[in-house]
Image (cartoon, rainbow, N blue to C red):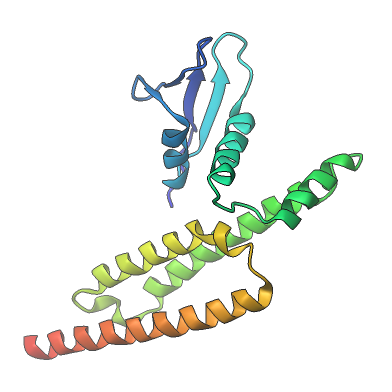
Length: 186
């Protein structure tokens, strides 16, 4: 994911409407969530006071997902977050979460890089399409992490094992198809 130099600036007017300064139009919380899902950083500021409201709006997006029954964070993590803010100095939870997400992003990027750089199949016709499918899968997988956090570690291990087996079977099938196409080309 390419990082933008500057975050997308969203201004909140006195009417509480949100204004995208790049496209010169009004946006909703859903639009802001879409920007973030697409890998874009946002900064939301109050037009009159200049206060940074980004944290408030990001928390509101998470709260809306939770209110629709989408488990963004499991109860035990929410409890730990509340507890961590009750500890003088804020506790360790926010730093732990930040470090965990940084590691997840870094490992995902390394995995995608290794798939292309170290793979001798990269020169095969159709590899780019398969690579695009893998990237879409990884994006979908990391986008769906919130739902998996509510499961026990044993459930996650069972699901991961089953999912890995299914993915491996699908990749083998796709590879066999590619090999058939290659042999027809020869």
